[in-house]
Length: 597
Image (cartoon, rainbow, N blue to C red; front, side):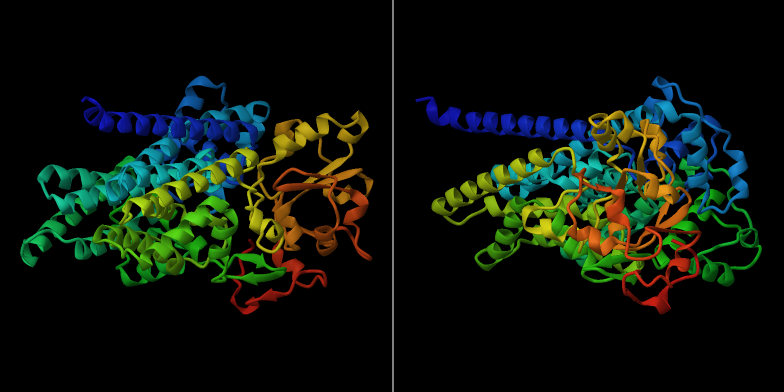
């Protein structure tokens, strides 16, 4: 008699157990990745800047985004680790765009023997944010598609290599992604049941995400679109308009207060003429405003936003299918999303699209899809940058994973539900196996179908393999350990990992050369303050490496030697490499800017 009554309780217990297991698996993979990789490209600069904020209150260092996340993230390391924080004030004499890297050089020189431990301590503060993202994705998908849909979305998040790579890296990407998701969810809850309390919570969520990154401003077009799409019963359009405007005004006011407060309300209302903007956007703003106009933001906030816009407007270079190009290529992000997704993710996405044929999207699905599309579209329209792979689309990933839940929720028949759940289980297991087998090399992950595109669609070298290189060298004879050169585009010195790397100018005297995959595109990349170009890059793509560390390959030095000329071209700026005959064919040369990249 009690079986029917106990059945819902049993299902809830099984669901809770599945949630706990997924969170535990996600946390375990995050910790494994966070402790097994070396300092990624800009992590060190984030950590050093956060230390300068805490020690000196110096917000001029790495002010391309607000300081709060860096301060909070490095606080455990600041309190628990032995850290020497160099004086930051002299960095003010440098251009705003170079201060962070110059200061990081000082910081790592002062903390070289303990640098890795400091960064690992900072990484631990990002792990709970990724766990929060998993819970948030589960809850939203559960409300849309039921328990099966919620577990589908959560499993995809838990085993996604892209999420695991960002969730174990200290920076602003994961906090921004989770913050955007939370702000959209809070806004939808407010629109569906507008009360003063929900309005305040939504406005606070929007303000909080502005404390992470300046491009959080893209949330406002998404909120406006949601206000238009989401139905709100029989209310008049005037009533709906007043609710939305009230929420948007409150969110704007709180965001302004939060942003200025993050910089301590210091150096506010300085005259327009006192700034020397480098971005064309801020230069136009300066020309429009009167010279004595008091800028209503802290000085370092204005400077940081200006530098961020300058970077977004700058013409970076990258390569696809062996051809270099300046600016952007529409194929870049779709290809990287495909290459970096597991086969399970791709299968769920394919079935999710096909499911639209027998069950059209609900109004709430339209809302979430529109929010994600606006966030991605805004980023693509406002920047001309092809770097970072899926990392720069990360704030759309939670929404995308929620929508994948439709593959196992809301089927029209019992038979269809069983098929959907079986498919979900197979896709989840496939993703889990791919993720576990690839651990901890999530930055260099390419799915099985895209494995052959690692040179054609390159984005797997973020300087994360110096730990793996140290472990490989430990297995080699002692004479080999002192005869290796290292080419990595990450600004962290090899000496931080006890690697006595030889100068690249002496590559002929080495036994082995550890080469970051970014250099195998043939394009000049930064290395220790210079630009280095590997001239025999085409041949190296076809030759077997001595060892594959993920984002770094190890070759014997003679393999690097081209038919004529030096093996490595070392120049002060990337423009100097444009005349080299072994440089890849470059598109959009007329669009390139004069500043070096």
